[in-house]
Length: 326
Length: 260
Ligand SMILES: Nc1ncnc2c1ncn2[C@@H]1O[C@H](COP(=O)(O)OP(=O)(O)O)[C@@H](O)[C@H]1O
Ligand SMILES: [Mg+2]
Image (cartoon, rainbow over all chains, first blue to last red; front, side, top):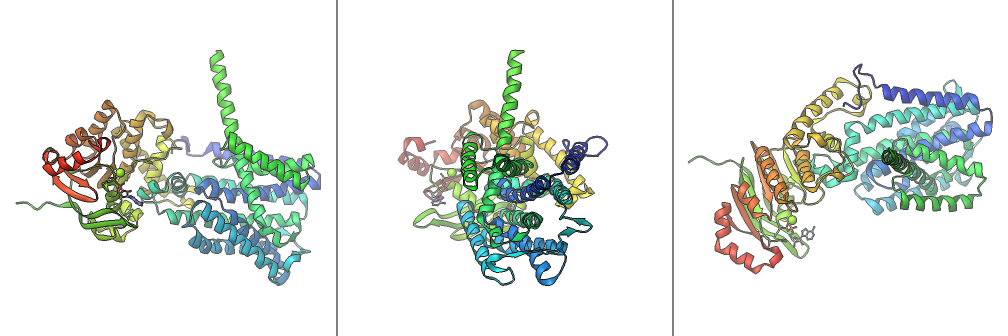
């Protein structure tokens, strides 16, 4: 691909972006001292990872995966359960959560991905309800009270109970997920997803097994959602059936829409706006819902491509204006 | 007498949608390497016949053999992978993408790399991209789209969009190409150019075309089949078919705007 390589064969632009991301992480991680801000920033990274997972379905294949919170929930419960009930370390729980959610995604996808549009969304929503009721009623999940009082939240030598370490670890994981997804997008699989989203008829006529590619998208998105669920634990310190709530998916969907679903980084931008803004403005929870509902209506009406589209058209207008004046 | 080889052999094809019979027992034989026209008034069942021949729609009864495959038993994507290309009356391209991206998506069948190959830039991925670069230049040149490779598909003129639709299919080197009303809505110059393109493209492959523009049909097709109300009424060369008394009767009975 001409756009990807230069003569030395190294993807300099991509490496530059990764370096920039690394510097940004180091800058925030070392520059800020407030435990509150660092914790919030770490949580924002975890939420951004979840928004990216949701956007694999939304921006990737054009479906609204209301049940995505199930995978997030599994990612939260798995480490909590293996730590509390089995005495295993946090990291093992993260891996178990990701694995279980991937297998569950195969099953759920097999049953639901033949549906499209509202039908898929509604069935997917229903599954999140089932998951929440299950979590409420099982003993191993701690019922309505949930699980809390974790003694060791660490990934290898990195102790996540330190806000600084927690932020840097989450941000680095977010960066790795972004780099991974960038490659997915520019691969044969990513091309198949994009063609399926734009026209499944045409994709099928090009030899693409549309159902299988859609299933692969869900199976890819599930462990990423689970990873996000695990990374939220050091911030929340508790895992309750609430993690399976469809509200969480809606939040992530809004974040992706605000930032722009067609842009890889869109959901991350949206997640930052979505978690930081209400904190800065000291919104009440109800006011937050109101403000974001209005924002989303505004965005869908003015710029269905999200803030990214607004930015692009502003730049285009600016350039155009400059040309006219010249 | 030499034996003719057929790219398509279908017998007794019926397709019912609930109470509506779109196809009422159609037999069709399309010689390999020919340009074959399917004509008839709107609602005659031409698009449905295309869907059946491409494996997109399964016939209610009847046998359908295309390039030696029983397409009634294969999913549509599998039929497409084995050399059957088709363009649609409406969405024939990926509107939100550039010309080049359209052809990249179309190259799916020629590529083998996985996400891991892509991440580590392994030889499989490099090879795939080299194959694509070579093929895309060739197809763009054949279709006269080389200058437009970075233009967004939705911004192209209608006649050029139809050429892009053909280019998309050519990426997979189909042995047989089904075109549903490709020159509908084109002006005269665009139609003439498109006919020229199909003559180039038709070399070495079978082309089946649904079209209302009889000049285009006459210029391109070796044989035509006239369909009316789910049945094939006449199969002959374009000249003779259009003079056939049954065909004239059928079309006199049709509304003005359904005439050719
Ligand atoms: N999916 C469908 N469901 C119900 N009826 C259909 C469907 N597809 C086609 N038909 C009917 O079959 C008939 C033939 O349609 P079509 O093949 O599109 O004709 P043509 O392409 O020759 O204009 C029409 O009467 C149409 O209403
Ligand atoms: Mg038609």
